[in-house]
Image 1 (tube, rainbow, N blue to C red):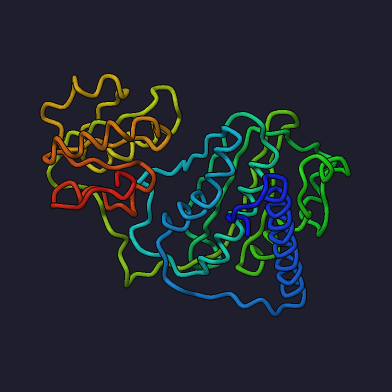
Image 2 (cartoon, rainbow, N blue to C red):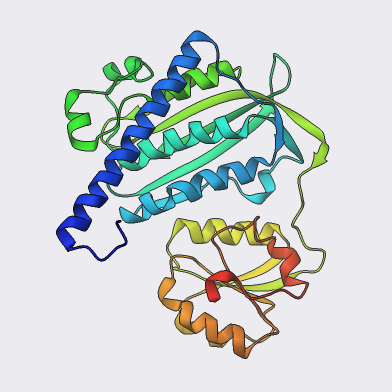
Length: 316
């Protein structure tokens, strides 16, 4: 109905109904999850998964929300910090926790950035301690309010719900999920400057499945077309260098100066206005691989740059 030929006022009403229905569904799901956690009936899976893929999938899920507020969303961990094997744990519940923390960070941040990171270290109780952190540059939380953050339906004060919305269930679910998976959750914050939320879980290395390595044996010269001052540009360049590439960062207007000897050109996804130019470049220079920075590992960049491949979907 929302896509049908309705008057604008009715389209807005339909959009409001859809949004309300989605909010209600989230609340029902959260309440059911919290009930299962509190009575001990929540089922936690143990499957093999790629840690980076889970983190990137969570960031992809909230990217539009962040971009709508003109916020940077960064993954702090470079390729070099990836574990050598897959992890045994529950990737669905880990992603659920990450989405809760990322969603809160975006909701309470008006300017600046959101950073996601992880550490993975041996645990004294066996296995490995996986700790995720989500850092924002938002409103921060007063010290006296932090004790009740992880309680169900709790928010810092009543004005929070009126201004920013939310049910007050996400942090409680994250805390209980983390405990169910052998860890915990906590917060550090400076009022007026931002917060960092952490949660830890116990996982096991899956020694049967090695994490795919995307470092190239033969170095490539990659032209990274991106805004010079964005934190994501530096992070992406570091990732590319760790994959045994020589990286030159430039802007769309200067690309032609650097094409000689370039193996690949990567467009930062923030430069949507430059897509027409890249479509033309992909047609005129088939010897140069053209791709987007949206998902580094999923694109298997190194492999594609050394083997024939079709044009990326965003160029079609």
